[in-house]
Length: 127
Image 1 (cartoon, rainbow, N blue to C red):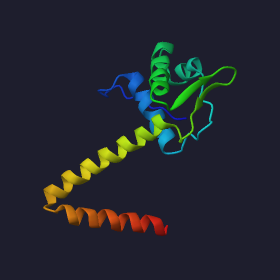
Image 2: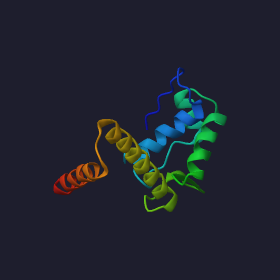
Image 3: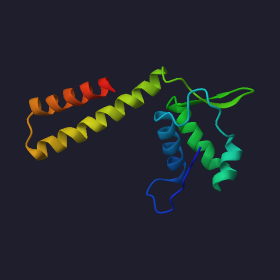
């Protein structure tokens, strides 16, 4: 697991950690069932306080990405998890809002945008 803390970021350190772990889970870089480093080990590895990593893990647990399992550690939850599905849906909605905004700026109408989406969907199914 790779975490990079940027001192110039507007995000607090705990949010940077949570965001990077979340992204790695969503992309499959960290697979479901994987055991994450302990809070103390992660804090030591990236040079932050245990309180900071505790907050990051706590936020990820509330969002349904991870869970603390007695005797095992902190594990990545299944992608079938409803909370995780909501995160995926939010990402799709955000991306589509960007696409709508760009289409409007380019002067495309709704049908043209739908045609682009259908073409992209079909090309992905062929892969």
